[in-house]
Structures are given as structure tokens and as C-alpha cells.
Image 1: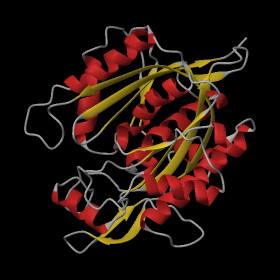
Image 2 (image 1 turned 135 degrees about the horizontal axis):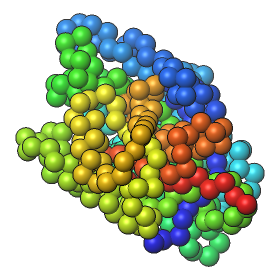
Image 3 (image 1 turned 90 degrees about the vertical axis):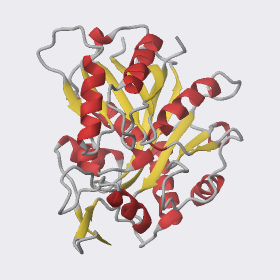
Length: 343
């Protein structure tokens, strides 16, 4: 088992809040900000979406950079003990395969974010263009980076938007969007979020700890025609539990990246049922996308921020939680988190 990572600061920019506290309060209250976008579906009806209202009407890669910079700034300002030049920044981006992706060079948003912030981060900073599972890949990299001399903190940030005409047209063609003619679809959105990770220093402080991490590949992904058995997600959850040195009996609720389609809910339910051996009176399933929309790569850090706020404010359903996420191409990832109250 690798050394546990502690989450020490968060930042968010979403359609329901321009800070982490505002976003988490909205999600806790089940508030969304779904409104008509400037895009139409094939029937000529306006598409609903969750848009981030920034100071100027930025679009495309520029807006991704502005959202990311704002979330990272909140993270850094809320930490107080972070030296940017000694801190690697891992910037999670939409997967390269997505149609309509506004990023052409993954290194460019990383450069622009640092320019916007007026800060230079550690030379080991990099972009990770893996969509939803980017967060898990970044956590894996952060584990290694934090063992290197002089690296005390790692920032994992993510920025993404599905509010692009060609992207929406592709998803509508695949019957993935929620429209007037398709009820089994998601509401597109955009967002950025960031978290600071570090190795455990002071065990007396209350803290959110990432204890386990695992990956898997689902052959029966959403675009395939194979029968769904949730093998990939089951594999990822098993690996995360093994990495954390525990079994499913310690889990008290889960938080997932599902954003409205029946396929993903079915997969999540099926995967856990294949592992569940414990009699439970309740087992909550949280899915923040109900409030912020389908926000691609940004959903990972958002889920971590939601957990941190829930534990700190005392409304979490227990102290051990499973998180999982997946991409359309079958890549799956799972993480096990625990709230340690300190002593």
C-alpha cells in the first residue's frame, strides 16, 4: 500500500458557484443552474446546460484557462503554506479523442494558466488529457512526486467544457444528450476544480485521506454492443480496496461521476453488487453531476471537494467512502477515501 495522501485545500468554479463553499452548498441543497444555452438540438429546441458565468464572455480554450486559474487561485490562497515553484501542477483536461475538443496542444493551457496566475510551478508540472479518469491518473502521479526531495505539495486541477457545437452534435448523434426527444441523456456543463495533495504530516489534525487507488478497463463500454457485466469497474474497485488494505465492509457511502444515463447507473449498481457482502440498512450514492451537469474531466476534483466539505461540516454518511469514475472508451478508476478526525 502506498503512502496515504491528504487533501488540504480545494477550489471550484462551476455553474452553481464560483468558489468551493458556494458550489458545495448548492450541491448539498440539490440546487442546479440548468438554463437554455445558445445551442439547439436537431429538432430546433434549445439545449439545456450548466454554464459558468465569468466576468467576460470567454469561450473555448481561453475559458478553460480562466476557470482553471480561478480554481487554482482559490486553492493556493486557502492553503497558506504553498510555494508554487516547489509545487507540481497536474492539469487534467478532456481526452484527446473527444470530438469538438477546444484544446489542440495540451501543454498550452498549462502554460497559459501559469501566465494568468503570474506564478511558475514546479518543472515536473504536466497536463493529463484523460477525461474523467484524469483525476485518478493525477493522484497516482502525485504519490510518486511527493516522495521526491523538496516536493511537499502537489496541485491537481481540472478544467473542461462540453458546451461546444461540434461536441454536442456528436453526443446528440449518439443519443447521449438530454433533449426533447431523448430522456436517457445528460445535461452538458463546464467547470474547473483543484485540490492540494500532500503526505500526512500532523496526525492530530482532522483530514480527508486518499487511502486506495485502482484502475480497470470495461470491454462493454457505452459505445460497444457487448452485454454489460461491469468487469472493468469491478476490477478498479477491487484494486482500490486492495491498495487501501481493506474490504468493502468498511465503506459507508459512495460518490460517483454518473451524469444521467441509465448505462452508468446500471454499471455502478452492478459493479458494487458483485463485491458487496455486507448487510447494510442504508448506502447513499452521491452524484454531483445532478447539479453541475456533465463536466468531463472536472468532475473528479469536484467530487473530492464535495467530500471534504461534507466531512468538515458533519453531514457525510460515515467516515469511509468509495469514489469511482469512467470514460466512454472503457477506462475505469476507483479511489477509497477516509475522514480521520485526528487526536
